[in-house]
Amino acid sequence: MVRSILNNVYSLGLGAAVASKEQIEKAVDDLVKKGEIKRSESENLVEDLIEKGNQTQKQIDGIVQERLQQMLRTMNIATKEEVEALERRIRELEQKQ
Image 1: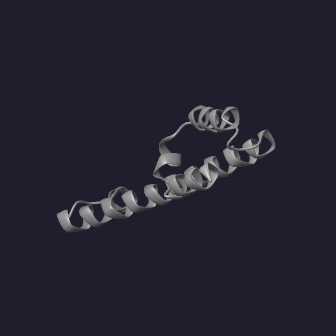
Image 2 (image 1 turned 45 degrees about the horizontal axis):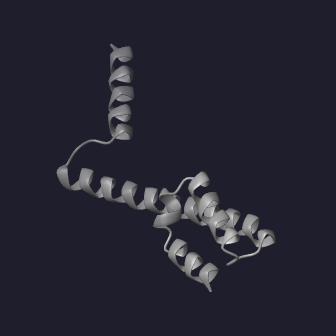
């Protein structure tokens, strides 16, 4: 029951994404000590929670990156790639002179 609740909380991802491996291990160890999960299940649970956290962190990073790109477009600010392309073009033009 508690394992199911813990999985549901961490399946939301944010908890696992911000929790360190040590924090996750401590929480799972506490469940083992309370007898709510078996020691044999604890290692798999820790690995599952860490993986869910990593996946969620990647999703969050993607969302943040997408939002930043949208903001840059609406603010009409040049991206790094656009600046680099302009620098290459300037170098090419300077070499032609």
